[in-house]
Length: 143
Image (cartoon, rainbow, N blue to C red; front, side, top):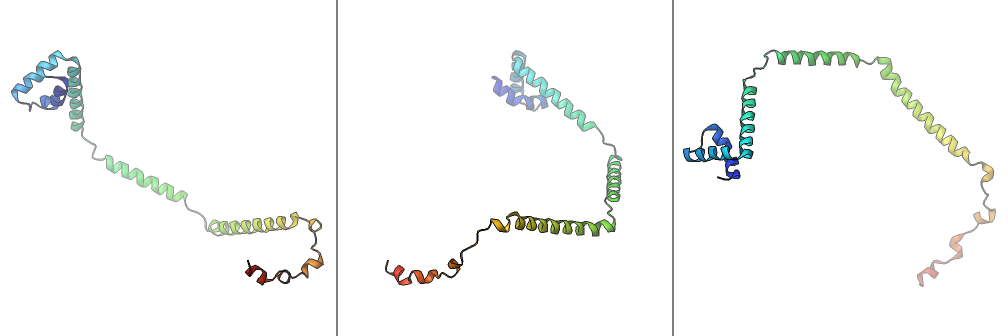
């Protein structure tokens, strides 16, 4: 028997469900092969740990204590979240006033940034000029 076949049959060998001939071959291989023997020992140890875990009984009052602790924490957090009525009213008003002041201040700064002297005046002649009369639409239609 090779190692791969032996590894595949270790679970069944441990449970004792292998046919007699195959069980004898696995036992002989485990005596000769240290790698498979070590795998079998690890499998045996893992089964013992799982069996011990299954035997552990849970505390029946554990759930009750945990739920009581959760309720107590919720009650404490609910008491800290109480916001006075004056804060519920003044906070939105303060935010609105602050926002309006910031917008007003921004517009004021933007309008006073460039002084009136730095603007160049448009000559009066340009305001009387009629661009439509300079070029005819017929000129563009001939292209």
